[in-house]
Length: 262
Ligand SMILES: Nc1ncnc2c1ncn2[C@@H]1O[C@H](COP(=O)(O)OP(=O)(O)OP(=O)(O)O)[C@@H](O)[C@H]1O
Image 1 (tube, rainbow, N blue to C red):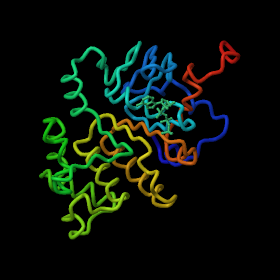
Image 2 (tube, rainbow, N blue to C red; image 1 turned 180 degrees about the horizontal axis):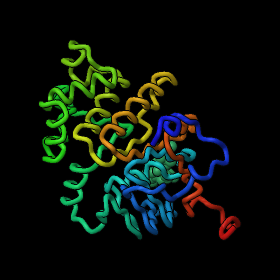
Image 3 (tube, rainbow, N blue to C red; image 1 turned 30 degrees about the vertical axis):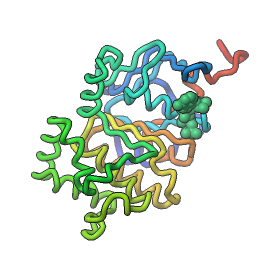
Image 4 (tube, helix red, strand yellow; image 1 turned 60 degrees about the vertical axis):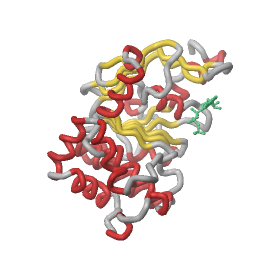
């Protein structure tokens, strides 16, 4: 991906950047014939096909309640589809046991959700290092990057704008929402997981801080060659990404009956 592609805003009608298929490249995420409904509810998602390549930074947009978080839950393996497959790096998540899914997630997935889930009994640095305790691959990658796990945690935090020593020693419960968000992002990025999924992690920030955070997040994903899937209802953020997927356009459950087959 070149610089112009990275920073260029999404043009209206630029269909090449709004397709369910990724441009050429190793597939990171493949969704096939996926349906999902919450218990007792109507189908929320019915997605015939969706492909995301390793080199992509994808923005998934859709109005509130359109199923963006549900889709990330399915990609993250915390929800199970009623039908169909979610393949990550060629592995069908449905073919793994619950423990196998947990292991796969720890090895290959970085997750930044709205609730940051930082552990209050761990120091800020230890929160960032946590994935390296569960994944040898990520531990080795983090060590190869900077020499020590602490060094790599500090590099990521500094790059995301947290370098003040007094702040780094603070309990995570005493950080602002924006600071917690950056700790959670550093934790998701450490050890360069092949896939990063993020669910509106910038919703508490003002527009300028949002832009800065996204640029740094994408820069780190580029460095590790990670695929990024970022969901938000804020369409203004799409300009930071290489492709935008409008969820209602790929989700048959969102399409009114008269539109079917159109
Ligand atoms: N735990 C749950 N149990 C039952 N229904 C749920 C649950 N979570 C979400 N839903 C329903 O599933 C649908 C999709 O919700 P989801 O959170 O995926 O949408 P979203 O596009 O991420 O919304 P937002 O932008 O507001 O976060 C909504 O109708 C919602 O009410």
